[in-house]
Image 1 (tube, rainbow, N blue to C red):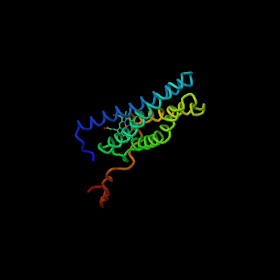
Image 2: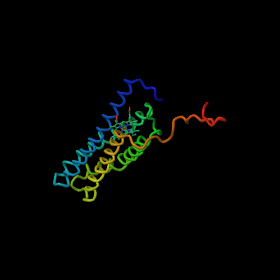
Image 3: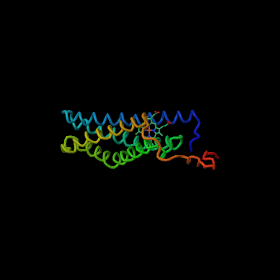
Image 4: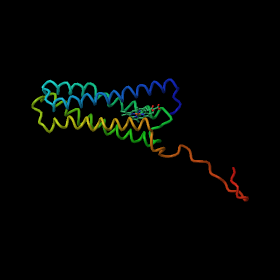
Length: 171
Ligand code: HEM
């Protein structure tokens, strides 16, 4: 469906921007907390906060971002599978949501419980994961503003040209 009224479309876009860029902000908070521990902050204090941000904000927001993103595509002329930039954003966001829900959130929960007992390798993971996801979100934002690569396929095939005896085309 592409005939969403103008005001409804603006409201949907506003919701999409607030949720997706809010998601990026929450990711930067997780990155900051992960780096803080590597720089000497108390893991018994910082990791429970990171676990709270992850479970109460970042994970639920990731599902909301996916749903609102898909609606922003389906309810506008952009479509979900019509433009390459939209499809790439869908793929990036889908992979990220799965990683957030099934990998990062359980790791953050464990870190919140273990605190200072969390092994160094797992501490590094809590910096690497938000670094990768923040980068992907920046890619998604750049794709959204530049909208590169054109369409996947034409919505309607071009009219067929009929050759006449004189060699001119017409219909
Ligand atoms: C399921 C994933 C997503 C889909 C299918 C999607 C789709 C779309 C579509 C179709 C628009 C145009 C809406 C309109 O013109 O009314 C849009 C705009 C936008 N999206 Fe997404 N999006 C997704 C995720 C994200 C993410 C993760 C981010 C950033 C973290 C993001 C950032 C933006 C921005 C900044 C715009 C505004 C672009 C502009 O108005 O020029 N989107 N998105």
